[in-house]
Image: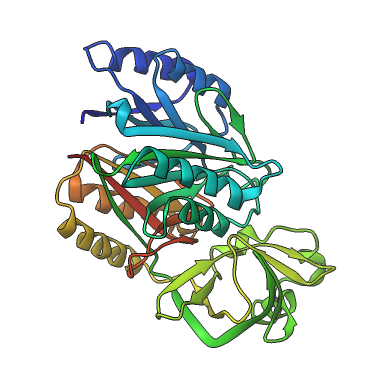
Length: 378
């Protein structure tokens, strides 16, 4: 599989690059595109459509290409995958909702390929993104490989978008369906955030809305721990500025953990809305920004993946915007450390949530996490 990367600061630059990259006989069939809000996504879609390139696209909160971090550009990968080995599913959530849309995509994947793998992007602010994973699993099978991330919008939290060749939506899903018997798909998700303090119990919750923690109003518990937010400050306000610092570390029965970032606090209902679903009875600890040694730990974790997948044609990185906020310019060291293992074309973006397998091999929805995907033609 031939893979070429692109990085454009304008629609005109994108058009020019696509023409140049396709001028030497290279005939890409699919593009992964991560695009800043400074672009008109309809025009981005049309640019690829004019070259008959199927596109999987997401809006961003910062872009990643190879070993560098960018702002206000469109980056991505062009790949010449045999059209028999992939398909792109696009759907708005509408009345179906997140779960059913994911299930439809999973069912389609299973119909097309005996051994599918899925790369998913989702628009929509404050959706219960865990339902994406549940739907895809129920459609394609419990062991299906799923990777991806939630589109972002530069921390405005107004509208996050996904797009294909024909449409753009701020409330829908785009999925790259791959035949894993022909295109090897491997990856992992890792965080490094450390839990602190006592274990808490979610005692009342519905989806991604938490009503009570330890039988107390959820927002009150949050304020008790992080009390510099008084009621007037919390009222009607997204908590995005602090979610990167204090996500909930949910403890699974097998001992593995996933992170859930608070997105919104409601001063009237005293609830917390999280980036992904939780269940009543879930135990968790709050977690805090780790030391900068987390970068070394992340790179070490991905070295284990390097041992399992020494070769790759292309890499896709979904990295939480919360990591970027916490680590500042040192995030560039993390990106470069990951890229240096393979030194193959890598595109990514800073997300509002990530999907990938934990250490137990089960794909989950995460926050404050790096999810890396490796693609290789067999």
